[in-house]
Image (tube, rainbow, N blue to C red; front, side, top):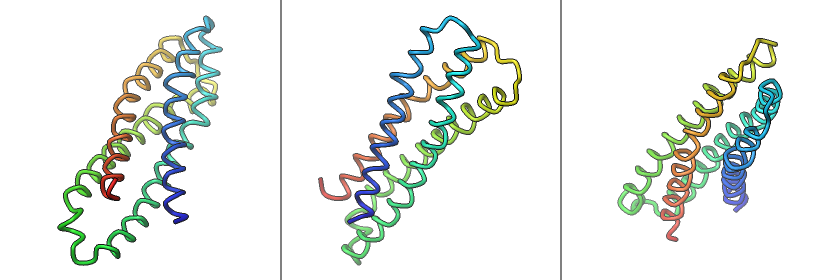
Length: 158
């Protein structure tokens, strides 16, 4: 029971952080004219968002594995027959969600934060490129997360 609540809480935190970055923080940067200030605020938000997103994805994977073990015990010999196809789709969606999510944090966000923290010059074009790459991945991450959650509900009979 606790693992189920942990799973749901991690999903809510993940979706909330994704939406906050996409709908609140990135548009707010557009209202700031100074490129250095934009870079400072973007680095500040990504310092929080990157580990939060990666950690919640990790919690979702681990708690999902524990929940899957419970389902296997409940279904016993009928597990593959009853839930095999749904599980295959869910795991495929989760795979792409994790790959894209880690790309966003480790491939886009982290290099920018490291450059900023190292004191390297960050131009307005650099900030715009990071914002654009983040915005491009947000809809796909949101769709993948919602479809994966839907498949999880479907496995539970909802």
